[in-house]
Length: 204
Ligand SMILES: [Zn+2]
Image (cartoon, rainbow, N blue to C red):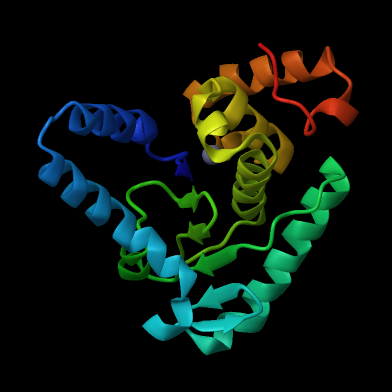
């Protein structure tokens, strides 16, 4: 899972170290229970309608009155990311929550958006910034083109630097500690032919 966490730097690192700690516990039963609990919420992305959300195509909201606006935002974001990258964004589910209860029920925490490989993403509300949606779509492309496991093994400066740089997030909404990652990604990208960016595993 990869989140957009401008207001909460370090959230991803915290969850990664927690996961490492849990993986170090040898009791299989405990590990199985932990994995099940961790996966249960994101798995709800597979059928948001059953949970009372209103969905159109693969865009879902809590209040049906927001559905058209949400779908317009998502369609525009998909179009922009596809034009920019030359890649087709995979057809996953995007839940745009208005309340924190909704966001947390799909596995969100203190970040503002989070993507789960093969399932989709949840965006927190009440505002849905277009650049946050694009940020998550870039993560979808990373998972799809490089593989979920491979993506998570890439350095954070590459994964997040790319998502921030290509999504066009405004400087004022990017926490300071991501700025060097974005610069590093931009420097890395400048040395490369963009045609090959998505077809081969990146080398660092
Ligand atoms: Zn991200």
